Amino acid sequence: MTAVLTEPCRTPAPTPARDLLTVLGDALVLCAECDDARLGGCTHAGQAVLSLAALARRTAAALGVDPGVPLSGGPGVVVVRDLSSATGLLVRAVGSSAGPTGDAAEHLLDRLRRGLTENP
Image 1 (tube, rainbow, N blue to C red):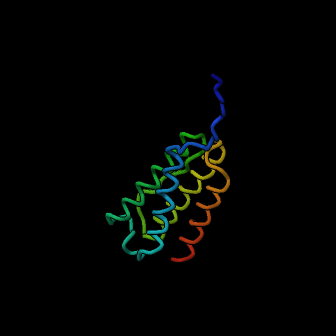
Image 2 (cartoon, rainbow, N blue to C red; image 1 turned 60 degrees about the vertical axis):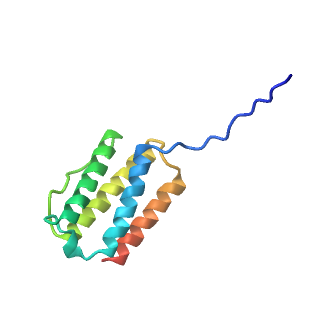
Image 3 (cartoon, rainbow, N blue to C red; image 1 turned 30 degrees about the vertical axis):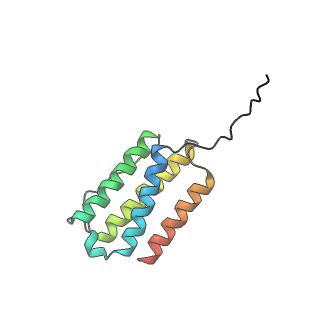
């Protein structure tokens, strides 16, 4: 009896950082659909956005990228910009750690651009 051994096709396994990038991309799209006043740092939604940005910064730091200074509050437009900035840091950190493919990073950046231009 002979056995045929084939090497399985290797695809990158999802990593927690890649999963977080997906969540951050979705959050940015939701922020683009909301009124800035609803996303101020003193609102529940704004606090959730700030928490996501802080998580992105901590993850980027764990991957070896300078996380910058986390934001603790501010008007909605500033809160959303902080989330965008923190997401960009994580994109760079994941890319430099051989994380997601270039296509995945480009897709996320495209979503970031659309999310930011829809709600100036």
